[in-house]
Length: 167
Image (cartoon, rainbow, N blue to C red; front, side, top):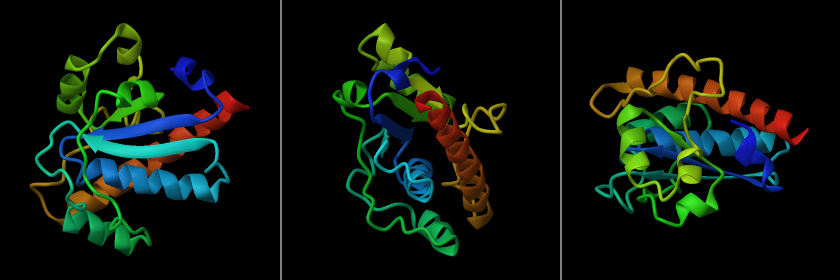
């Protein structure tokens, strides 16, 4: 999994979920904060996108915003966007929320090298055995809290992986 991270001085991460209003913007904002705390903002670039364009231009889900607010993280500046063809070249890792998103993304992969960039959001953290970050969209606030905690651990694990690769 470390191959693509060695090709550039800056590691570029794209978090991808279905609509880019719950899981991936939360992961993006969490990763930005963790990178800042760790002094790695200049080493890693972060963005998020969705496989669907149904929420394009929309802010994150109000429940995701509320959970992030509760944890001192502001999601309000973020806006949903759909994954673009140039994302395959621009990013080193495309980190997907679940199997449905992964399959949708892999169908669009322009090459075998691009396929190798796709990993689950949880792949580098202590919850690597948890393949899917559950979609909290159809549930209540407790689902957003669970997703926040899972993504926090996943992002911290990914930062440790990046640190080890760049060491």
